[in-house]
Length: 179
Image (cartoon, rainbow, N blue to C red; front, side, top):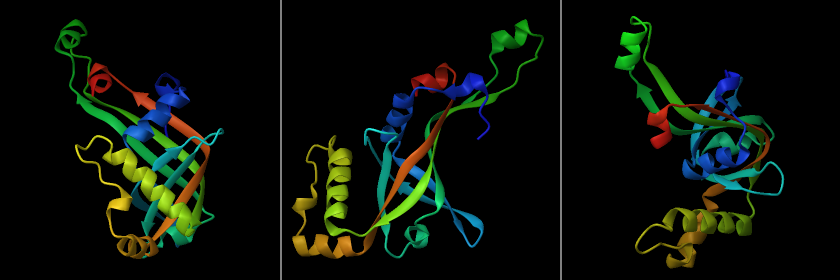
């Protein structure tokens, strides 16, 4: 990622917060030497180090078979088109241009596949609790029949990325800061 110093986000907690708030990440892997992207809702886990990203995918999705690959997960936060400021336009004789402001986090690490039933149920329970928390009647994994959940669990594979490097770019204006 092109990352001028003035846009570099050095606050690791701010990057973690962006991942938590905008959990749908774009997971970039290699398939037969070509880049491939899957859109996956991740969970950030503080492991006392740089952190982990955890998710699950359909067993039919071949991405989990790329375990061992070095991967990139991209999370996009607030973004906005920024038109030229009219006062600045007048003051500079028209030497202004529109721009696009955004917050983005890139996470680099190695992909791991996990098929352990207990691990998967823990992941599903945690992700569900997080995303259902604001609902008037939060749904829990335990609300569904156990045989149904067991069948669904068999149709997924867990994935995990131990974060090796995390980079944030906050190209921001007041429009993005308020978003």
